[in-house]
Image (tube, rainbow over the protein chains, first blue to last red):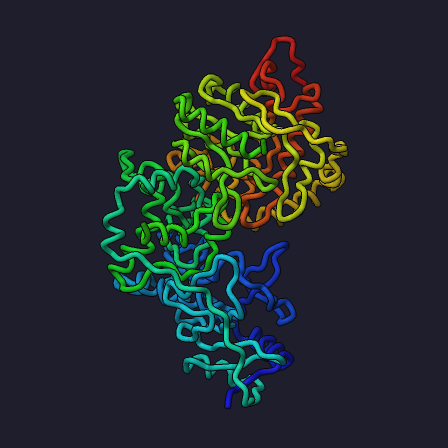
Length: 326
Length: 276
């Protein structure tokens, strides 16, 4: 026996959730579909395939004040901005949910990132399984699956007249308390999974570090930040103080990218990764070698966003195959 | 001989006789046509030529300064080479131009609007010309999109651009894809002194895009690479087209890069210029 929810009940449930939570769901933003806060279930887009950006921005905002500094005659007052209402992220794909676990490894290990941690603790995720892979998808190569429930609080799987519902965690069960569920005998259809790639061994990666391959690959790289910004697991940031006037100052943390020419520039001007070759190579070694060595999980979930969006068609799947092969 | 075979034969010959060290052309990628760099005659085999060769490869000449290279270039791309020559970024003698007579390109399965209006199917400059200029009827560009923008009140226009720029994520793909954005350090990223903050927020996004558009005034060739690479779908070429139209109106129909002998109006000064 499986639990199900009709489309009408789902809409009612989502509308009810918007009263207590900031509900974030795939919705249309001009010509894109993005995970953004909704005010009504009517705004939710269901046939979105893959959103243009991941849901990362709701855990690591593009721009976030980490300290507000107020200065007056009594001195300085430091205030740490807090997350307002708890969040529900609806319609998360299993790969994007896995990205949160991957990020937890670096963000929540000591010293833990309090801002990220606060958002993680106050977010409930409701996933929707992918029916079939999109162009560029390779989740199964990175340890995920199109119907993987393990990094979600609730998993929905589309059926003829609604969704199969599985509460994975206690948080998910609690969130479902107000939902009108039914039961069905037949299981939902099985997701079609992308074919898994063969990953190179650590020794293979290490042996190829100095090969001309990286210089040749970087020939066509534009050196933009698109791959890092559409990526659900890239977490580089930069911090700067912003003075709005002489008494109001904000310490802002904003997205940054390892592909930016100044990203590694040190005081004094030395840049240990001076050209696109070193920076591009770093991107793939960080994702597929160093992060795994440190945290036992790769810094990539196979969502395919960089694959389809890179203007120069630098395709991480091809790089995996090139490094593994020959 | 097929057009692609002519490109390959020329590229192979240039590499074999050592005239250039690299030929920049189009190759078949995993999902689409992508830039291909051939350093050996064998690597030329990956080259393709079809209606998806949209990308303006001239941007890559900025990475190959003072090297002998050949480049597969459409008429609009060749205008970009002219701009770089005028600005002393590229030396004519270092670049072998494999000029393509252009049938027009497609984007997302549709003929590109800019190509429908394009009256220049043969490059203004080349070392070899490949292909036949197509016999197509060209509808002149009426700048209807720019006219619609001009018809707005300034408040409406501000709201329009604020809504568009708001989607920007400051990934700089537009700038990195642009042949004309070759500054060693972009003022939008300079940290000391910091002119534009790091905030991924509307004022900074607006400043960046308007600054970039002004910086391209009289230099943009309308390849629209910026708009094609934008992951957020910003209508960046609308901004560039507005300025190109103004430049043409102010400076006797000037088109960036159209004539190697004519100096760019915004890079020249004559005493008799009307400064009003």
